[in-house]
Image (cartoon, rainbow, N blue to C red):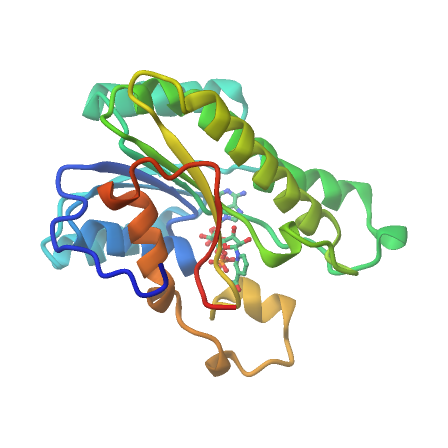
Length: 249
Ligand code: NDP
């Protein structure tokens, strides 16, 4: 699906929530989804970045987006319920959910990995997608064939030295995706859930993880969007519980 070509109206009238929409892959996904017709809900922790994405979408004359500021590191159950109430009252449903936000955390051996960092990484990368999924399921049920995408990593499929909590959180994300996919498959308006490993992509997170690397050797986030479109749009109806790679291996 790296070469998937989406029809121009693929996401027309769809309401899609993207976490970590202010930067990197999440920003590219939000703008891309809007370009294909979606009303995008931009969720993230840095309001200024979300506003910049909002302005970019508006000035391109794509459907007017919405902004939900939320820090996934500190957010508690009640704040997720508030998000649900806000989306319910504004849109009445949710057609797509891209769990994209994540924290890299320290790149260090488990022997030296501090517990505070572990807790932060787990909170943002795994607990937040769990709580958000839980809060959004009733709204996703109001949609015809809703899609949930979880963001994984190659180290979330095979463990690798020094990737610590980040790698382990991504294994958890794959597990969450499989459990959710299995549970929601039989529901009346089947909700599909899949995971994407973006592969090496030119973002701040990649630069932090690989400081010695030439960033220009990696594709920009905009270049890995075909799979993000395929899994969000109607061409993937019936595809669920699967782990995908956004770039050819
Ligand atoms: P970036 O660091 O560039 O962007 C991450 C986004 O998540 C930012 O918008 C950031 O907000 C947001 N975020 C981080 N912490 C929180 C928080 N506590 N609350 C709300 N939002 C938060 O990362 P990428 O774009 O590279 O990564 C996107 C996804 O892709 C992640 O899940 C990552 O694990 C995965 N991935 C990326 C790869 C790559 O090569 N880039 C490879 C494999 C997987 P803010 O801008 O305010 O900091």
